[in-house]
Length: 291
Length: 291
Image (cartoon, rainbow over all chains, first blue to last red; front, side, top):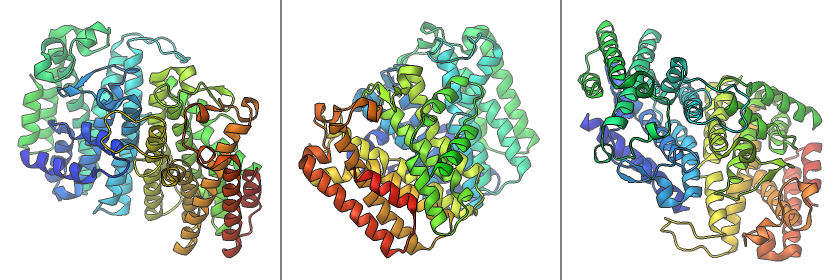
């Protein structure tokens, strides 16, 4: 896992070389290169390895997913969104670079990521195009953005919407978990498999694993938001409760959320077994998420 | 020209069908579908026609460029950027949908546009990938975003930048004109030519034409910002002067800017002649920009 993290960090550093105008590249680098677990890119590379691919072929997609993740953090932390002053133990992007640059850094990452996939692809044009399409769908109004909109609407009814007020129902929570979190896990695992040239049945298995693993990860995050400390998590905590956010904990309670988390991780292990996948990285990740 | 506008408007309406969560699609539609000249997509389609292509093959790229343009307007108008309350005679996106949704709608458009290019492409994977790469470079830190950063920094030194304070020099103005405006004209003309399968020399000629035409368009816009009325332009005017913005007018004066504008449009006509391009749409556009 350390090897994968090193590969990703070196490549991200390389992609994001500072040039004129410096402030935009410095702002992009600041959040992308904050020390982190690099969980999504690691899963992407591991999916590629599992299906017999050359890990280097999945590296551009893995880095793109980490940049997309950083983009979502930068914009989620903005004053008009979650208004968070800290991320990974450091001041949020807009606290360092100002709101205007933070908005633009997020914007820039959204298209910089697929640009890097194209410019560094060792795959066929067809496979590269398929990976870009997966990326675009995951990043946009059918993916992350849809999840974020419903998430912030779960706190407060947004101006200008003609949609009926949402009820804090399991289906709404499931929509948020799927679109805001699981979408990136599915993207990572699917594109890793695609980079390896895996068959459609294997790619479908990665969709299933990504959905379950991503949902489990979000529930674990919801639990930690309530039970952990700033020092452990590096970001402001207890905000979900303060903001009346719809989370697994607010809907099912701490114990109910933990039960769901354990069911999901059991199901992930079952997918690995059915697919005959041997992966210490997947196992370690699942065991860590169980809390 | 009216046929092209109709083609683009119908396709944009089709691409941006509202689905759950409605507010994000409504916000995207609001700015993208505001009545406008659709100048950039029209130029894209015309470039395709000129080089013997099927105009329908350039339509996804043309629509993507209009969506990218709308994205830049939505984010440029935000309170943390230019803080503009009006656009095309209507309230800005964030005045209708709120800042959070406006940020997310812009984000969503950035990846929705290339997604539509991929999903609706009738071109080879290689050509489609090349168009997507052009799009990503134009949209991001090497294109539009670089231009916007330097533009807002020309008003006020941004926090967090280690770059030296910029001087209001011709080279800085040229950087802004090239990256904030000409980049989309080049993108439109180049991708239109690519969709037609035009040769590299023709694509290079479109780069030249786009650079000159886009710069002329920006200078005309700077002149109108000073000499026109809200009713004529549909947006708040005189803001450049109030904000001490670096523009062709602030650097060269009204008469100097007009001279530069006329030189550039003359050069555009010369490119058309050299390339033996017959296009009433290009000629009409140039004559309109001359003011």
